[in-house]
Structures are given as C-alpha cells and as structure tokens.
Length: 409
Image (cartoon, rainbow, N blue to C red; front, side):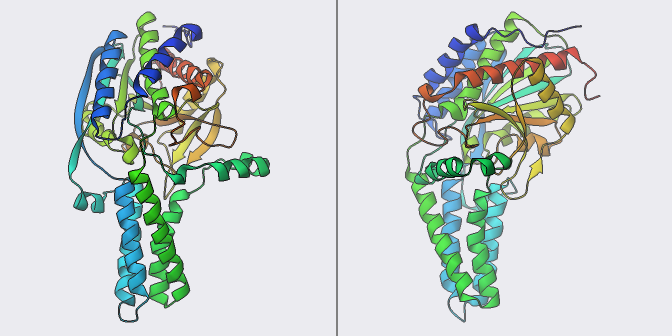
C-alpha cells in the first residue's frame, strides 16, 4: 500500500484548530477541577463529531502535587535549616535535610512519590480516549495531549530570559538543553544537609535562605489564578481533533490511531499514570508508538530527544525519533532536533515503560515556550502557523507508519 505523506489542507484545518482552542480556553481547567471535567466531556463529544470510534471520558485517580507538595517540602527544608544552626540539633537536621532533598527529587522526577502519597488523598481527573484509523490493525500510534491548565505565578515572569536572549543571542542559540531550574529547589535543602554535616554555618545559611525563598515561590504559585492554557496545551488538543478530521476524510489502513488527552498533567503528571495502568497491558511494545504533543503554538517547532528535571533521560528508541524527523521532512515541516528539556511531560511514562516515544513542542526566539504559565496564554497569542505544522507532521507520521508495516519489527 502506498500512502501520501500528508493530505492536509491547511486552510481547511485552521478553523477547526481555532474552534477547539477558543471553546476551551475560557474554562478554568486546574487539575481535578469541574472545569477540567467539562473540557474533557466537550472534547469527547467533539471527537465523536469528527468521526472517532467510541470516544470516552475515563475517570482516573491522581494525587495533587506540584505547588503544595513542593512548597511543603521547601518549608520542611527551612525548618531543617533553622535546626542545623543549633549544635545539639545539627546532626539530626543534616539527616532530615537530606531526606527533604531526596523527597523533592523523587516527586519532580516521577519516582514512587512517597511524600505525596503520605500527605495527599486521591482525587479524580478525566482522560479522553478515542480511536480512528484501522480498527483491525495490531499496530497503534498513540497521539498524546493534555487538556488541563497550569497555575500562574511570579516565578514565570520571563523578562530575565528575554534580556539574556537579547544580550547574548549566540549563547542562547548554542544551548540545546533547557536550564535546570529544579536544581535550585534541590540545592537548598542539600546545602543545609552538607553544611550541617560538616559544621559549615555559611552553607546552612545559604540553604535556609533558599528554602525560605522556595516556600514563598510555591505559595505564590498555589494562590495564583490558572492560566487560560491556549498554547499549553489546547494547541495539542486542537491537533487531535483536526487529525481525526483528516483521517476521516482519508482513512488509514494497517494502523490504529489512538487519540488521548490526559488530565492533571500540570501537577507533574497525573492522568497519564491512570492511562498507563488501564491501557498499557493491551498495547504491544513492539507495535505501539507514542507521539506526545506539548505546547505547539510558539513560533518554531522542535522535537525533544529527552527530558529530566533531575537526571536527563533520552526517550526510548531513537529510531522512532528518526522516523518522526523524516515524516516532518516529507511534509515540508521545519523541525529542529537535538533539544532536551529539564521539565517533565507525560511522555516520560510511556518511555519508561519501553514504548518508542517522541515529544513535539515549540519555542520562541529565546528558546522559551510562548506565554508559559501566564495569563497571556490566550487564543489570540497562539501562532497557528506552527500548530498547522504540528498537525501536518502528525498526519505525515501516521501515514508513514501505515505505509511501512514492518517498521519496528
């Protein structure tokens, strides 16, 4: 079977992309909120209208995290710092600060999350699942997005990054891995632990100050309003709907396409864990590929090779990322490779489970996500040219996989 790389009509696709973004952006979609559920049910209905088979909203449990959990750990780090200033409490404070450091690393890197499990109760989130393509095929492309939105906060003010980009454009251009911002949060209790164990009050003082600052930062995030989330991540949700339209008009053979929009991604991965528990047992690792679409409405489309807030992890199976790059080239889509993120996305969960995985995202001239976690993340600030490119790439990838039934075998 020979399949064209893409059948996309950009002029016809853009109204659909705008429709989805503009319909969902006004909803307050904080993880586990009524607005998140409303968005999920709207999306399932819209995917059914686009011709998908059996669109379904699946309720899954998640444990709230991010600002409150990390803020509580930062406060614990400050307490250990105060304790480390006393001679009698210095050694126990060193051990406690080391435990705080480990707990932060565990939570932000999608580990067992022992502190989160001990201090929070499960809440419901809502994943949207729909099928298109060839229902009889044992080969599956899973296209991932998320429909929840993130809280804002002063920490997301990007004026320093803009200044650096204007002042040192050559340095910014040469850096292909985002700055390890989470390391600052990790370093505060770590400095307390090292300083207390060695009797270095200066290190303890620095760690104490960092922990107090971290507590204030995450308290601000926790009480700040939720961003409209048009770019992050309604642009990807819109691609799911427009892709369903494309595959209804020009069906695929020998490839099932599973469209998945998870909830609670912005708490450092919530709904994707429930999706994995429910669906991974039915998805063959040798015949399933995950393409994660994350914030595709900035001016320049890029592919991440890996991610890791603490330790960088390249995604499983480079050959799949090579195929994504070839599909982009076939579709005439400019795609920058070689980028890695120090933040986390839903893609890390299928990658760790052994599925070939890639993430498509976008950046501005300063290598930042446009309007990231800001109230300016609105539909009118989305670069729809890039969203259309993401759609063209995704469709081309699906058709390439359908055209090449032996890929991955």
